Image 1 (cartoon, helix red, strand yellow):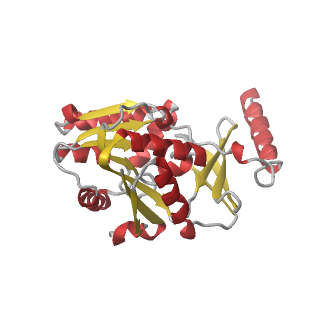
Image 2 (cartoon, rainbow, N blue to C red):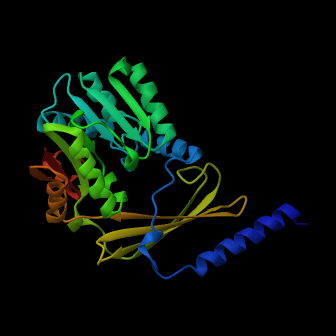
Length: 295
């Protein structure tokens, strides 16, 4: 005979499925789109696990690809021993710590408590803690002194999770923090390569980004032509307890002309464009465009 607990779970599962069935068709407002809960402790721990998983490049790139990128960045950004670098959305510090090992002084900023804790431990274990400062903070709240850095990094498309107004404000602030002649490197998805078809998918697992117990993930993607924005909506059902979580997030895309204009408006004097990471041997290189803007 079913127990009261199993009856409650079944009721919650039924309610969750009906809620999904009656979900809106598309997005009624782009203001619904929110970023992932990076600063939620349990989620940040699971995301860190994905960052460190070398079996895929979905959260961060594998070591060999990072090494190729770092060589490229070192040359294109005129990095040298003693240069001051700001790593925006630094994650677990995999780039920041390597730059510190090469003699740079690095400040990394990220919203994830697990990632920042890992970055600090990594810097300590690599013997470069004195050259690294990691700050747990929403990057929209950064308040650094003017002309404090030689280089700023905004990698792996993270600028795209912000609205256009927020992105413009971030670019303006980064321009102010750079010394004259300083460089900003921004990696963004190539707008021409973004999947613009509406799609749905689902999967189940017993451990992953969405939890450490059996869950069902249902996802759908929409493209908003007027906003040049991809929006994804996720429904995650924790199968043992019937709990439903809804997450919506946006990926703002930019044409080369738009981003170049935004960088110039922010105070950068020149912008160089590198499709496909300048042909670096990355598995997804063709999906990206790298901008190097000089103050």
